[in-house]
Image 1 (spheres, rainbow, N blue to C red):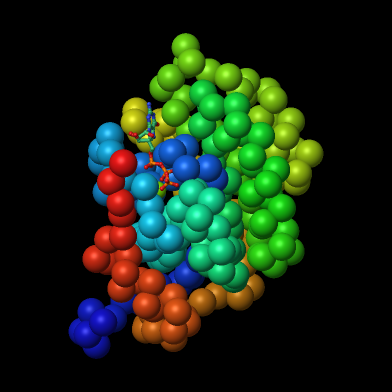
Image 2 (image 1 turned 120 degrees about the vertical axis):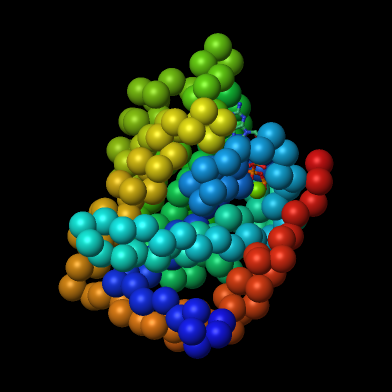
Length: 211
Ligand SMILES: Nc1nc2c(ncn2[C@@H]2O[C@H](COP(=O)(O)OP(=O)(O)OP(=O)(O)O)[C@@H](O)[C@H]2O)c(=O)[nH]1
Ligand SMILES: [Mg+2]
C-alpha cells in the first residue's frame, strides 16, 4: 500500500463467513461489497479476502471480510483464519436441510478456534426460493437462541434482500461492544499479521475454481 493511499478509520473489525459449500457465502459478500449478483463465482479455494468501509453515526468503520471455502478439503486452512475474528456469520441455505444441520458442526469449530466474545450471526440464504424452503424461520430462530447467537436473519444474495441490513446491524453491535477499545490506525499493515497480509494479496488476485 502506498503511503498516499493510507486510509484513516475509527474501527476495524474482522468478520468471517463459514458454512457448507454452495450456501452462497461468496454471493453474499460480493453483493455487499459491490452490489452485484453473479450466478457463478466458482467454489472458493481456501479463503478470499474483501475490505469494505462503511460509515455509521459519523464513524468510519473498516470491515475485513474473510470468505472461507465450505469444502471439507479446505477445513484445516480455513480454521486458521477464525483466529481474532470479532464476528462469525454462519450461513446455511434455507432449501438444504443438511446445510442447516451442519451449522452445529460449524459452531463446534467456532468454539474451538475463536475467542469467547466472538459475535455469532445465523444467516439463512436463498430466501427468494420460498417454494423450495425446507427450514422454517421459526426453527432457525429457536436454534439461534439456543446457541446464544446475536441474531438470525434470512437473506437473499440474488434478490438483494437483507444483505446490507445483516452487515449494518452486526457492525452497530460490534461498535457498541468495542466502543471503549477504538482501533485508530492509518496503516492497515499495523493491524494485519504476516499471514493475513499474504492472504490479502491472494484475495486481490482471486482464488476461485469454477464448478
Ligand atoms: N436462488 C439463489 N441462489 C443463490 C443465492 N446465493 C447464491 N446462490 C447460488 O448458489 C450457488 C453457490 O453460491 P456461492 O456463493 O459460490 O457459494 P459458497 O457458499 O461461496 O460456496 P463455497 O465457496 O464452495 O463454500 C451459486 O450457483 C449461486 O448462484 C440466492 O440468494 N438465491
Ligand atoms: Mg465461496
